[in-house]
Length: 310
Image 1 (cartoon, rainbow, N blue to C red):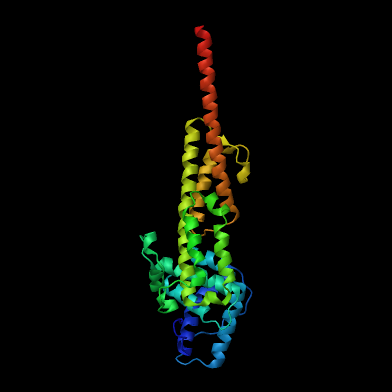
Image 2: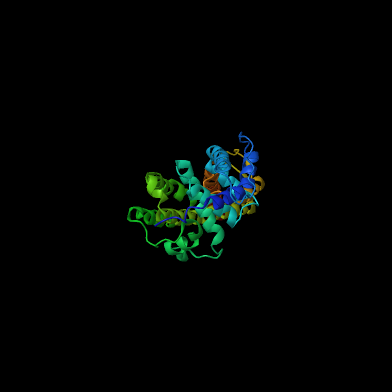
């Protein structure tokens, strides 16, 4: 099992030339302090010295760009396309020495590449390892569609994630941590093409589970706010979600709409994600509290009626 063939000096130079505009935008956007990029004209036969200078500049940028910055940039810029993702992935795959940060970037890039190239209406049952390997062939080369034995636990983790019915359950079940642990413990075995394809499939499927549960939570919150407003409740105690003790439902609705946009690009958004989980719990509590008050009022009315009849 091998990656796509190592590029020739001319192909390598062409890849760097194609990536230079992307890296220049990254440098400006994240205010990375590096020198000017060497001239990367499309020479038919770049000199070893020119190639060495260009590689050194790209290495400087790579060392300073964090995976979350690369993720943020590629998921929000209009510059992302199949060629850009392919060139970025190949660039990192063919590094002679790969740091853990390179592994994380490759993992993200493979999922992005698969997500971009796969049909939008793809069913979960269609996303088997054979299909993922086929889509990733332009960057990983042709691969047998067999799961490495040491990665058998990945399927167990996916099954556990699929059984989660709420986002809070997914976040607190330890499922995501199990996947990260398998990835970090894989060390150099991660860079086996079959392993990279298996991890790309895993990450793509986990992302699907996350988005499904996230939208379920957001919709449940919006439905709950509407129900509360129909009952005449126009604010609620949301201190557990780091809002006020008397938060207007109109503001909460606007926040949920903004989260739909924000979470579209990132499925491990840290604090805002925990706020979403806690906000649903606050809305659920308000709904239960309103129901209890309604039952108490009904009992009081019934008792009053019985007393007046006597």
